Structures are given as structure tokens and as C-alpha cells.
Image 1 (cartoon, rainbow, N blue to C red):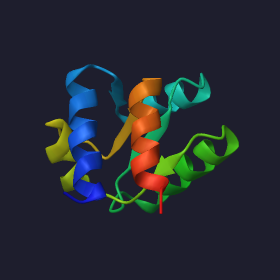
Image 2 (image 1 turned 60 degrees about the horizontal axis):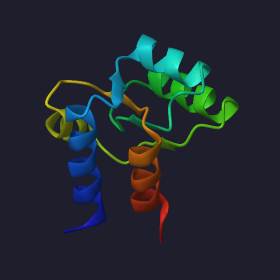
Image 3 (image 1 turned 180 degrees about the vertical axis):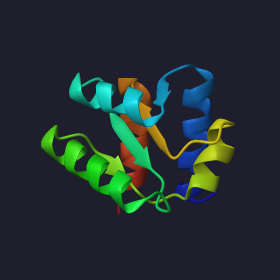
Image 4 (image 1 turned 90 degrees about the horizontal axis):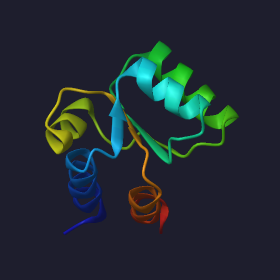
Length: 102
């Protein structure tokens, strides 16, 4: 199984464990409170949304992934979403190791 599929499977597990937050406003609040361990932004989301979250994650030093489409993220968590924040440090650490390792 490739890392991309492992990430999506683990993201679905985090969603079922209620360790994620979805939706623009809620994710922004989690980033500002420094509770987001990792943010997933759909690669096919709008330019304004992408700029807003890229800038916000950069200013709050929150890791951001734009490697997945809205469809891939939605299938993984079982809801139609284009922005997802992982709030648990354990899930965040494992997902970051899968995403950002060589």
C-alpha cells in the first residue's frame, strides 16, 4: 500500500475517532488556537481559500498538505469536505511522518 493510501486510511480512522475538525471557520479557529496538528486542504479548492489557509498555516507554523483532491478527502472521512484539521497529536505525528518523509 502506498503512503498516499495509508494517509487517507489513517485520516478516516482519525475522523471516526473524532480527532478531526472540518469546515473553513472551525478549522481556522483550531489553527488560531494552535490546536491543529496538521491541516489538509483540497488541491482543487478555490484560489482564495487556498491563499487564506496557506497564509494562516504559515503564520501559525501549522503543517499543511495540499496533496489530495476534494473527492479523495471526502471519501476518506465520509463527508464532503475540502478542509480538514487533525487535532490529535498522535494521529498528527503519524500522518506527518507518512506525508513528509522521503
